[in-house]
Length: 117
Image (cartoon, rainbow, N blue to C red; front, side, top):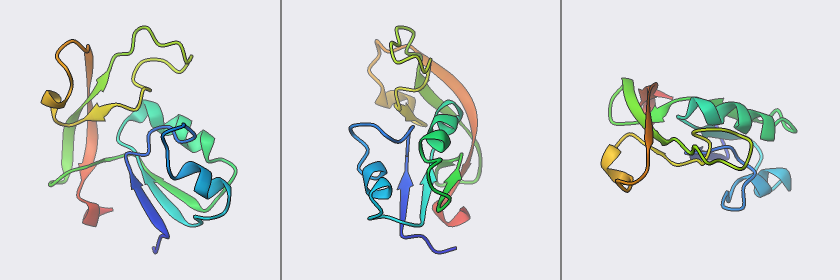
């Protein structure tokens, strides 16, 4: 399938730091693929793009191998957005990328290469 764009790490969409959402909403970007590894975020992402049927979603981590990996997400216990833990859109498969003072959740997720999509 051909896409006009691919966004890796799409988060929940519709945030002030998402360069893609408004372009899709305004019709600048049409047929796209949004990739989000965090299973907590993917439902919010699909809901935020429910206004179009031209966006495709993959709930996987992009890696150098295919299989499963650990995804580290912030626990976000003091969340005030009402979305819950893991929805701050910070996630990585490399634990050392987070500051040591952030409590992390470890979840197993499917991973694939970009060519595997």
